[in-house]
Image (cartoon, rainbow, N blue to C red; front, top):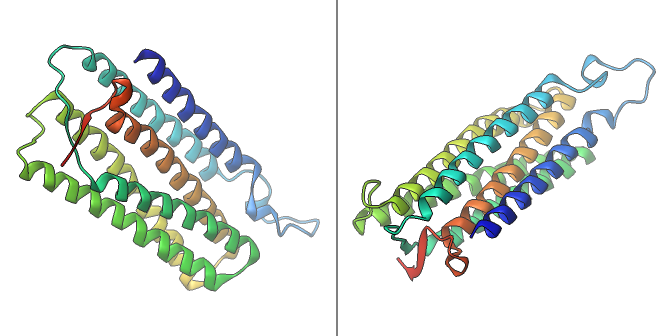
Length: 232
């Protein structure tokens, strides 16, 4: 169990490190820099990019603390997994689709394809909202089956993990809405590219975190599961 947790932590750290490195190295607002005089936005790394680094670091620390608490509680004899909601797999697919749509939008923004940018943002938004709606349906299914926060430690951690992740997704939708508004207005192209790039990085991060949490939820084969193999 300890080895599996270490592996999951290392995997998450590698994914997050790669995403953050892309945030620094791939700077779409510099692609158009041709003249000797650069706008203020192109002169250096925007503060919002550094802010994203800091936020992702804090968010990662929060999730690591929750996973550590989960690992300690898992070792007690009274741990009782709950049934596995079938809808979790579909929700995961929706979040994968949202992340891919965001990356496609970044590529469209670099090409200057405004129509494709708007379509990509719309697709990622719809898929993300679908993910959140699916998570709420899972909660309703568990409550309908008699699994509440106070039912067991496994149930409490399931609600904790999905709730905290869902709140981060909601926060991302705020940034998505602002980027979408810029794209639909067609104003300030450089800032729109920057906003879309940062949104894509955040969506990839949300997917990476969810992959780790999903593994903790369903990996009963290695003794880590919050849910058993019995479907709900």
